[in-house]
Amino acid sequence: MALWGNKDSKTASGTIAIDAAGVVTGSSTAFTTEAKVGNYIVKSGEHYEIVTITSNTVAKVRAGIPGATLSTVTAGSSYSLTEKPAYLTTESASTSGVHGDVTKVYGVDTNEYAAERDQGTPAGAHSGWVRRVVGSGGRAGRVMTETLVAMGSLSGDLEDVVMQDLNINITTQPSAASVTSPAPLSFTVVASTVPSGGTLSYQWQVSTNGGSTWANTVDAAGTSATLSVISTDAEYVTANQFRVQVSATGATTVTSNAVAATIA
Image (tube, rainbow, N blue to C red):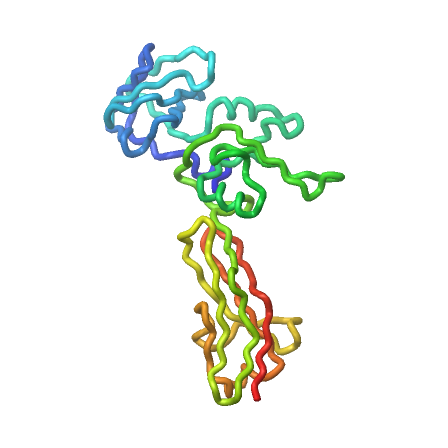
């Protein structure tokens, strides 16, 4: 998930010219692969919203701010591309209160929206540009989200700790194990991601002091959904507790319940 100023800017090859009708003529440009309709061409602080892309060297734009006059650009001009809406950029010039506060406006893609919805705190009504404000004082802990510009998707997003791409749900917690030595000892966890498709990784941990401290298991099987070892291993003795941490790129790591082993 991208905060303004991270990967919301896109590669912009070659140089351009823009005439009074909004026709963009490029030289060594790659509009069909680097840009998309709805992106903004930025030149000397002016924003031009792309409305059509004909080829790698021909596109059409309109003034990026509603009501603004379209300025022409001379041939051979360098430029930049961005997904950040121009009128939000203009609003962000305000420094009073939270209105237009650029540090609280985020690009939320479809995965991030689904992850927030799964938590019961959707990032506005749709994926897109979202203003998110965390309350303070008497409103501490409250989060306000407002969709500023709705979009089907955002590309080029960068993971951010504010809004995650995925949630990890543990659907089946490990169960306590009771075996007679030297029978195998095993614990299993079942987890998934929302949205689906995330790649999960596992790290089993053991505590020898009632859960006060935890250490990663030394067994090689401690990095899969099932921990299965020989109960005679000194690490796996009666009264020890076990848990697993489940991780995925773009998600906050979750920890299972702690369970005990009983070895007769």
